[in-house]
Structure formats: structure tokens, C-alpha cells
Image (cartoon, rainbow, N blue to C red; front, side, top):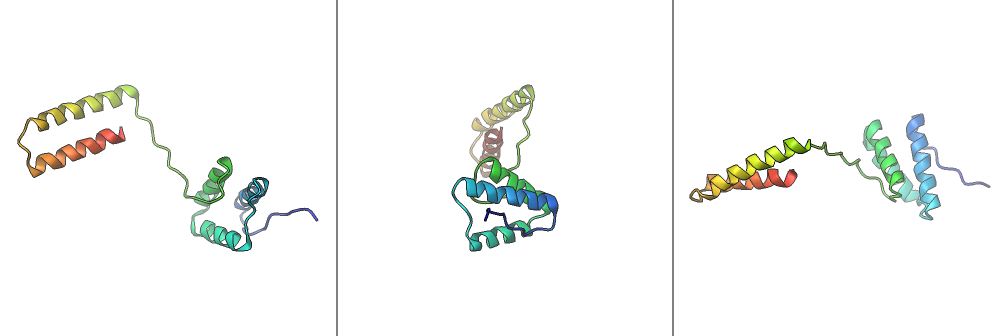
Length: 119
């Protein structure tokens, strides 16, 4: 008897991705137990349709054994805009470092460091 993926969803696209995920797990020699399958179905059912499908696709694309919320892609800031913002922040940081250290100055320095780290 040939292996068949379980049918757990009525939505055709979601079921197709779920079957592909199960097949990927089988191909990497890590088939799911009944308990793991049940928990995965429960997790997918808690997410909206788009998130569940994106999670399955992400796991398949990366050969992951688990299901995770899809990663959000960071939008790239154009180089010249990014460099301009870094220059502005560094100038302000230099000004603050010449001032007496007060709580307000420390907060602003911390904020600038956080913004620089994101860029």
C-alpha cells in the first residue's frame, strides 16, 4: 500500500500545502507521529488561512521539521536615504555626547543607538 498524506483541511490550497509538508517530512526521513500531526493541525487551524499557507511553504522551502509564523521581510531603505539618516543620527549623537549627562540625554542617546542598529 502506497503512503498517502492525511486529509485534515477542507480548503484545497491549504490541504495541498499540508500534503506537500507531510511529503517533505517523509522524504527527509522525519515523518510525523499522530500526536505531532494533531498538534500541527491545531497550530495551523489557529492561524488565518494566508498565515497557515505561508508557514507551510516557509517550512517546506527550508526543510524545517516544525511550523513557525512566517518571517516578515524587512523593506530595504535606498542606500542614499539610509546613509543620509545615519549621518543625521551620528551628528545628533555627537552633539549629545558634548552635553552634560542627564536622564533625557541618556534616553535620546539610547534611542539613537536603537535607530542606528535598525539601519
